[in-house]
Length: 485
Image (cartoon, rainbow, N blue to C red; front, side, top):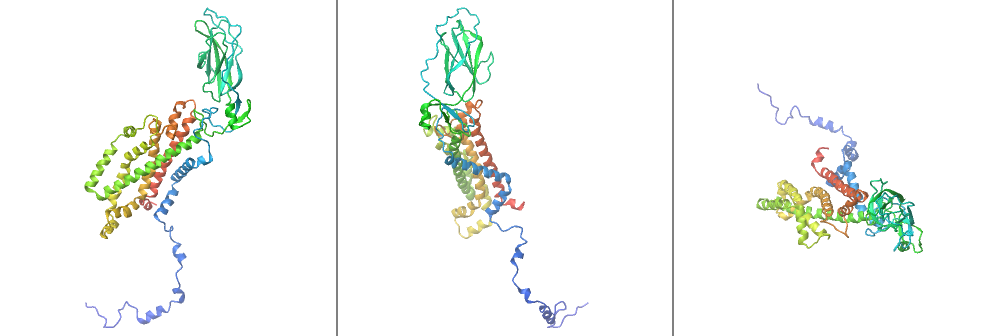
C-alpha cells in the first residue's frame, strides 16, 4: 500500500493551523507574564546552601558526644590559661601548716609561740631501776603539755616504778595490744617522763601510746594511750606576716585549698593549673610540628612517587622502628641534660622526630589518590608547577584530614609527656607538669590519694576528650558522610 503525501506548502495533519495557534495565544492574560514568586520557589528546599565548613559544623553539633568533648577541651584550656588570673595562689609557696590536707575551705590555725629548746620533764627524785625482768605496769596520768597542734605534741606521764626507759608509739587508728603503731623513739633514761613529737604531723586524729621498758630492754605488755585531734598550728613569725598584730593564742584564717595540698604544703589547684600549661603546651606544640612535618614529607612522597616515594617510605619505616624511650635517654645525654633536670626541649624534639611518620603516611595515601583527579590534570595542562599544585590545590583539600590527625596527635603527645615525667625523664622540679605531679604523689597514694587523683583524673579527662573530639571531627569532615544523611 502506498501512503498519500501532503501537497507542498500544506501543514501535516498533526500540526495546528495558524488559526488554532492564534486562538491559543489569545487565552493568555497579563497575569501570566508577572515575575515569579521567589519565596514560593525556595520554600521546597530541604536545607539552605552551606559551605564545606558550615556543613561540617552542622554535623558536628549533631554528635552530642563530640560536642560534649569540645566543651571539656575548651573548659580545660580556660582552666589552665585563664584560671591563674582568678586563683592567684603561688604554686611553689610552701605552707608548713597545711601539709597533705584534703579539701579545705575556711580552715583556721592557732598561733603558737617559740617551741624551740624544750627541756622536757624529769621525775624527781630519780626513780630506781628494777634489775629483775618482772612485768611493769603502764604509765599513769598520760597527758599533754602546752598547746597541741600540727607544729608539735608534747607528752608527759608519771614514772613507773622499776622502769629503765619508756617507748613511745604513734598510730592513726585505734591501737591494739600487739600493734601500737609507728615507734617514735624512747627516753633512754628512767627519770625522763616526757616526749615531744613534731614529725610530719597533719590535721587528723592520732593515738599516742607509752610503754615502760625494764632493765633487760623488754617492753611491758600494758600501755597507756591518749588520742588527740590535731588542729593546724602557725608559728608566731609566720602569723605576723599575714597579720601584723598577731600574738600567741590567736586564731588565724588559713587560705582555702579546694583540691587540698601536697606533702610540702603547696596548693594542688594552683599546681594543677601551673603544670597544665606545660603539659598542654608540649602537647599542642609537638603535635602541630609533627603533623606539619609529616604533611610536607607525605605530600612530596605521594605527589612525585617513583624513587622519591620509595626512599622517603624507607626512611619512614626506619623512624617507626626506633625505640622511643631509648631515643629520649640518648637525646638527653647528647644535650647534656643530667638526672633531675627538666628536658622539655629534648622531649619535644623526641616527640616530633619519632611521631611524624603517622601523618606522613596518611597524607601520602590521600595525595596518591588526589593527583589523578580531574582538577589536578586541568591545572597541569594550564602549566601549574608542582609546588603550586601542592600548596594551592592539594593541601587545602587535606585540611580536614590534617585537622583530625592533629586532634589525635595532641592527646598522644600529652600522654607521652606525662609518662616520661612520671618515670623521671621529662619535666623535673622546680617546673611541674601533670606527669611530674603524679610522680611526686605516688608515694602517698595510700595515705593521701587526693594528691595523685587530681592530676591523674585531669590527664585521663584531657586524653579522652581530645580522642572523642577527633572521632567526631573525622565524621564531620568526611564528605562521604553527606551521602549517608
